[in-house]
Length: 186
Image 1: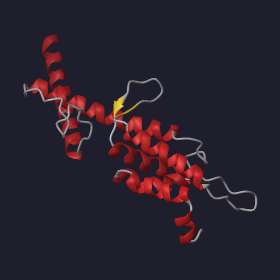
Image 2: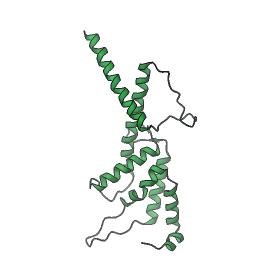
Image 3: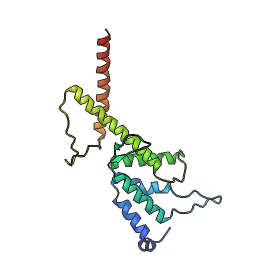
Image 4: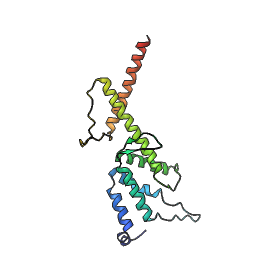
């Protein structure tokens, strides 16, 4: 491990640590462990070369850029609203899979993480759509497209309660549709 003095003197290390510290909380919490997934595998003697700081810096810069984007896309599918919370959940998932040995290492790029973020964002978007549809069926007034800051951005972040409520509403919607279908048949 490098001395603290080396950390202070090396611009790549300073910049990398500053970028990690500046990441949103859900992402910063897992960023250093995630960088470990890019570390070269041990050789026959069991020694693993360290991840070069210049590469770590490039990876954190790329990650920060992707996290800051309001949408995530993957595999030619429609883009989905994404939040730092989605990225944090995806990082947790990737790290858990790696811990179970379900991940080929070292990672070459962020593509696998982006695919997992897309899954998380897609599920959140679906839950929001189900909640909006259920509200329409209940006759609730339409919600504004304003984001929490009132800036016109779509509200992408959902609390656990909102997701649970949306799932419950969707279940009720399915029951209603089932009853309506039975009445129309009978």
